[in-house]
Image (cartoon, rainbow, N blue to C red; front, side, top):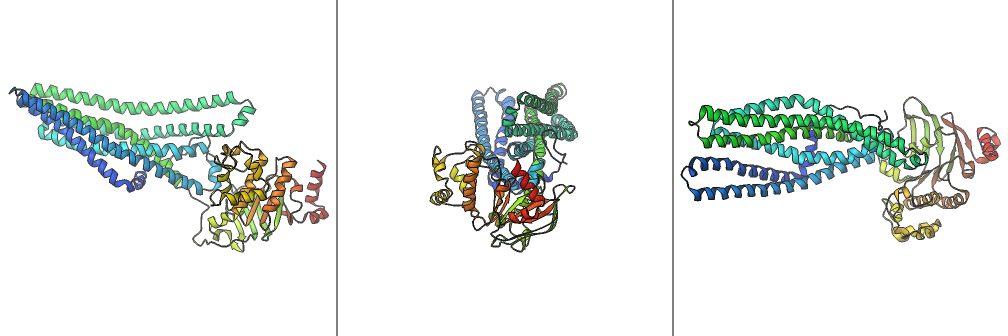
Length: 585
């Protein structure tokens, strides 16, 4: 099912295993995390000493009017606060390092996965939503876990220390904040499923906005040429309104838990003073009541943070669900256990091959086709007849449904994918050029000297064209080479293929939408590139492929006619009619 900006993503189930899985990304940084924990605990302990100093000062120093002791205790309190702040900063600096590294590792894992996913995944998933999973979610997840989750654990530890100090000071008064804390925890747990559903909704609406932005930027020229700007603005406004509505719902629920915690905090503190002064004083000293109230304040601080942190952790769980959903996507096209690296020469054979994209409408049915190494093959046929599908199957972008596809008498599934694709280069109607230098676009992953690159470009008669650019081979190309003409882009792609030196060359409408003068130049370059390579050309114009060793007409899901140009003309069949139709037009 296609997932675009109009459709929310599929629902997922909450699983604690996601938190367990993400901790594997934190494992390499356990030293930094352990140090952060230690520093966090130390910072909290220093602050917990302060109420005991207040208790001593109120019950002893003030009654005895020992002003020197009061001044000393004041400086001790100030020193403890400053030391605690300094230690807390060290803790956060360490966590920031972990955060950046974990976010980096998650993004690399996602990007690596995306590189190996089949074409069908990108055909059915919005690129904007994929981009959101690869960028926003890792950043948000690592930030929440590094700061929120770790701080939450520290808050729980701090809570235990506060309870120990509080209960050791006075048990009865300590029960007041503890009972209220149990009440808050129960309410938050009951609200958690609702919180998760609302956050998922907000994530989906945000992803829809990103999906539409990605689609709109990609099709900006169409938008402008059809004067569709106003309509697109209205669509974006509607998507934004849906997103804002979903975000507000998450904020309302988050504020509810925060407000509830704050109200119960103030209520418990008021009760401590009321019950302590009304029913326990003077058996319980004023210093003890003030100390308990101070501890109650310290007790509620982590609870307030925990209530907010709980919401954030639930948010992180929704991000993780989407991240691991992507990471768990089946590769479909991957190396079989028996896959081997072979020296590919370029023999290709289809034996009773059938294929369909959706298991409903057949594209190829019992196709039998044999191509010898070094042969130049031309594929013709109506749009949708299966020509481009044949090319995709040879590159193993898709796996056949039935039959056998052999490369040099070896089942294509038994050939190492990297070896196979290294031996095949494709040139499409609209090849992609990266936003990098001309030189980087030509060599891609291969290590080739500039001298060798220039020698190949001179052979193809495009060196002068490149040197006439602003910085020659160092010229940075705009998005998809938009600062070049269509013909210049195709010529660069031909040079790229020549540099890669493949055994099999695939040309899919490589000269369409190009003027005749440029086409002649490209054909001259093609004749050089095709030499001693198995070449499969798909073309609408028969004039482009009439000199091929063999021409195959694809019709009725199979190779309907096959032979040289002259042989097919002499047959006076479907190819003959197609040729005469093009000749007359």
